[in-house]
Length: 492
Ligand SMILES: *[C@@H]1O[C@H](CO)[C@@H](O)[C@H](O)[C@H]1NC(C)=O
Ligand SMILES: *[C@@H]1O[C@H](CO)[C@@H](O)[C@H](O)[C@H]1NC(C)=O
Ligand SMILES: *[C@@H]1O[C@H](CO)[C@@H](O)[C@H](O)[C@H]1NC(C)=O
Ligand SMILES: *[C@@H]1O[C@H](CO)[C@@H](O)[C@H](O)[C@H]1NC(C)=O
Ligand SMILES: *[C@@H]1O[C@H](CO)[C@@H](O)[C@H](O)[C@H]1NC(C)=O
Ligand SMILES: *[C@@H]1O[C@H](CO)[C@@H](O)[C@H](O)[C@H]1NC(C)=O
View 1 (cartoon, rainbow, N blue to C red):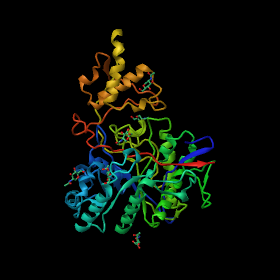
View 2: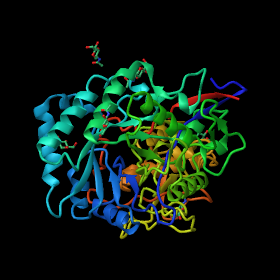
View 3: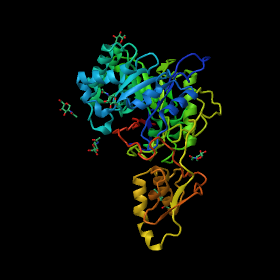
View 4: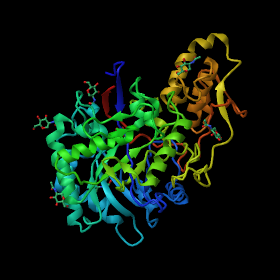
């Protein structure tokens, strides 16, 4: 698409904010996504403590598992629980929806219970790459869940919404500006019904916006347009005369225009996911993530809003809280590295959630327990003839553990072949809780107590978990959380 005179501008964006400048913003307004697709999970109580230590008062879940919900009870933290896409079909039956609400919402609604504010009905169910699988079931499920919430007597305070990817709207190729934003043609009628329903029920529109993916997917995308510090190539909306200096604003306003066209121009918009990954790709770095969040949080704190929604408060959930090493890498090798915290709940870079740009670190998880200081590496004394089996063994390790840090441009992308093999063997050994048999690899591997980490490349040691030997599997299907931000092609 993007020819030499065109710029793919994906839009991303968000933020908004609103308010009065003297007020300290947002720690109160900020939420985070708490995903649990990790082989070794921090105890839910540690995660909740970490949220509290950082003043984070809102959290978005991808399910309604009892562990996190019980840990959140009594914390006062606002919670969005979720119904995974594969359960949407079941929710088209009202009795099933009512049971879900009783068990997963009403049951926590007591003094000292969980402060549930939203139910996410599906997760990006209309993503183009899902081929329409959930088109028929999402709206009936949304209606049933809101009705069940109303009938359970909690409908005034708990709202059902559908987190959607920014690819549900776009601007026409021949007029690629935010003011021309409309819902994607083939789902336009359905989207119009959904947004009118949300408007009636008093629920917000929830959108996931990813400037990083705009950059990742488009070689010609101007790097500075993905951030918030100004750009040498602003996008001028020829209809409105507005000059956009970042893709987040451009994307958000494309949605605002689509909502206007659907007759619900005042519908509140909440950003369900926004963030920047730190590994697995050349532009997925801690330095860029730090720069992105610094700009985003400052923008939120200034209450500037976006050009079409100036001075309007927008609720934002950062994606995500913690790295998840068993997520699918279908979207890209960066997919397991979206956390503002590492796998062990420790911060990756300086971040000031209040948006004042102070050089402060988030508070990490407390009391994390690690496995012993032991690693598994390539055995320097392995017999020469066994080296022919190295490739197969590395592949085996990497298909059962996370090797995405070895990708080109990533933190461990500079290792030589021997370093690669060591990294892979160690990743597998750690996932297997350092079981002795997990460091065999047909005689090619050996364990060591000497840290093989290099300057930028960490050979991590896994954390101890309550069930350290039964890694929490990917029980949940497609958590494709982040997916493609849509792309506006702008002719320069
Ligand atoms: C509550 O949510 C969990 C997690 O999504 C799900 O497995 C369970 O079936 C739900 N309960 C009911 C009664 O639907
Ligand atoms: C969608 O269709 C494409 C192309 O036919 C296919 O490769 C992909 O697996 C499908 N995805 C899903 C989720 O069905
Ligand atoms: C959705 O409903 C239409 C019309 O009834 C049908 O043609 C289509 O196959 C359905 N799609 C799915 C994914 O079930
Ligand atoms: C949206 O909601 C407002 C008030 O809540 C109402 O006045 C308006 O008619 C609604 N619009 C639609 C299209 O339902
Ligand atoms: C190391 O592994 C990565 C990922 O598998 C691969 O792309 C790279 O070529 C390997 N490097 C060497 C020197 O073998
Ligand atoms: C490597 O680990 C150390 C602590 O063990 C941490 O301080 C550092 O940030 C990590 N580096 C990367 C690239 O993850």
